[in-house]
Image 1 (cartoon, rainbow, N blue to C red):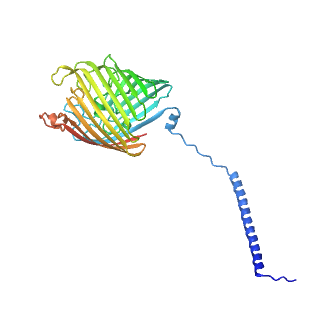
Image 2 (cartoon, rainbow, N blue to C red):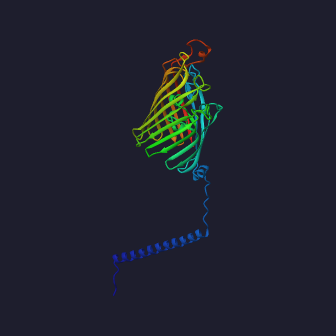
Image 3 (cartoon, rainbow, N blue to C red):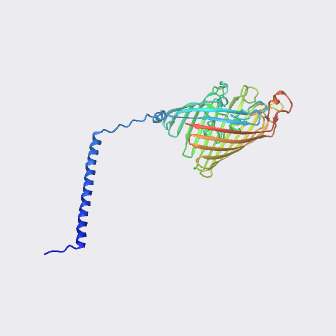
Length: 412
């Protein structure tokens, strides 16, 4: 019997044929992929992988693996002073930035240390540059190189002992430029306290909050003792939390008067110093610091009547540091120094200064600081120009000085 072919059955037949064709095409493509993959795998197995070239470790990596730390910095700057950079006594009226108009390599410093929590270690800190002339120990050659610190160390539990040459406990500011927030150093840093000591120091961590420091040394900035007497140091630091900390330290000992940097008479006399530094972290960005000093020196010849007096000096410095963000910081410093008998500056004066510093840190290795500073005395203590030294009465002196500074510090 003849079965008529309808349009619907014809379409179904065509669809069946098309479906079979698609299935055959997909199967063929899949088979090609399997074959190519197998050949690729055989090719990979036949071709050995290229060995990875090891990277040579740096010197820092090698030393770090041994527990030895090597680091340093370079501090270069330009400074301008409105005056000559000295008092009428001839004593410099700034600590490091004494040139009226000059570029300077202040410090190129290198420190290598091995200081384990247990056992023996040591530290050597070398400083080259213009500042080395200022921080050099009394009686040492004033060159552009200084062994700023060099000591052996022994640590056991809460006890740490160092012996050699080391920086002072006193003051809010330090020699190391990277640890300060302003370019110029404070009055107190240069005129109220010492820079370094040579002797022995014991630190006992009584708890996580309290440490006690006891030491004996040759005196203020002396590599070799200028007399048979020694100077004792006593310090205590208290850090109850992350917000507040307080450090207080005292020095007492017989010091030489003649042949030193500052004004003196006779041969020696008892010198005492009490220094305190308080830090308050108001927020994670804002920090306040207060540093106060009281000092005195016996057997000083009075600048008033030539008699022997106990010269006294005191002062205070206040700081506000605001970390705007990771790259910008703003710092303000204001201080007051009373050289009651002129022993520290050669002039009986009340000296004030204010400093504003803006710091920019483009990377963690580089810091650029720009500052403006004004100094004021209650006496015409600042030498303005060289006409003062020509003997003209009252000429070339002033009671104030202004300055600007631009500093770049590279840390490595």
